[in-house]
Image (tube, rainbow, N blue to C red; front, side, top):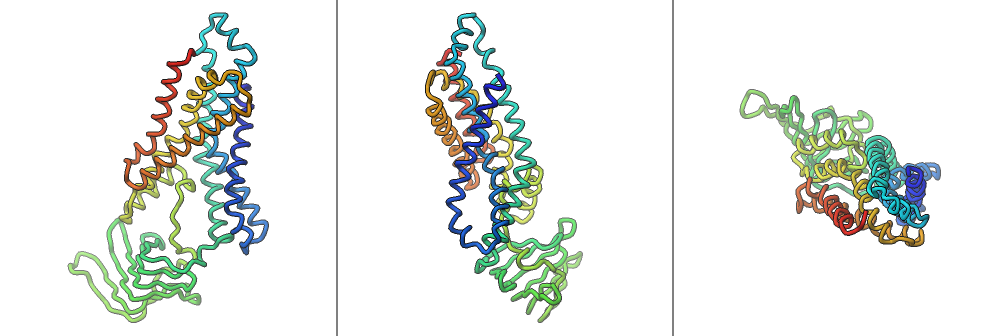
Amino acid sequence: MALHFLKPFLFGLGLFALLIFLGDLFDKLPRLLKSPAPFGIILQYLWLEVPYWAARVIPLATLLATLIAVTGFVSSGEWAAVQAAGFETREFLRPLLWMALGVTAFSFAVQETVLPMCFARSQTLWRDRIHPEWEWDKYPDVILTGGSGQFITARNFFPKDGRMERPVMDYYADGRLVRQLDATESNWDPTAKKWIFSDGIERRFGSVVPPEERAFSRLESDLDTPPLVLIPRRKNPDEMSFRETVRYLRQVRFLGASPREAQTALHSKISYPFANLILCALGMPIALRLRRSHRAATASVALGIGLMYVWAMEMSKTLGVAGRLAPPIAAWAPHLFFAAAAAYLHKKTEI
């Protein structure tokens, strides 16, 4: 039973990952051809993208494996023999659910280890070497993170020029604001490797109210983060493990930004692997309805249903990030819907 599931699962995993990878490759091909990056860097980027797409299509491969396994039992006559012998058909198919549960655990493991590491590295290569972000003109109204406890807000940030307009730099210690630099402009000094603040006010916060203030025309700060490193890069949840997402959520809340994206991603990391178990349960009654269909038709059905499932999950996540759905509902609603569909089909089909 495990081999009947495992062989088409591996085949489907490779097939679906290749199809989606090629689609993404053709979409990025014009920028890859114009990129100044060496050919070796581009190859490294493409290779690191493979685990990401493979992890995304694991549920589709699980559905295909279930459909092929069950239709194979029907075509070979094993299904009829099981029924004629009076064997409980649910018991006969239960090993497939155990395999899907194993794939769910495997998906969790990949999501927490290989996927964040490879995807984070591929995104770094894309941002820094293939399609450099420092070539972009400016970042308006940004929040930047310097060293430990250092946060900067700026009206405009020009990374290529190493310049900020209207920067305000806050220093925190033990969760409390202790110092602030409020300046007209700040420029990166490549010789001193420091940010130089111009025409501003330095404030020190303590037990004295109001805070102590001191005007300055030029102040060499202790901010030594280069402009290209300081670029405000929004972290993709796929670049983080579950624990890293929890830490990132705390940081977002501390900065006063909207936590909806991080909250939705956190719940999705828990819910996404369970798609394998639900699609396996959904695939069993569908396979019995397909009966003796050709494998190409079975693969088409698996691709169609699987893409509908993935589309529903992505759409629900988008609604969660936009605030239209609560993060737990956004992460679990598609799973509940397809689980209900699986339960209905099981009831209508003799299994």
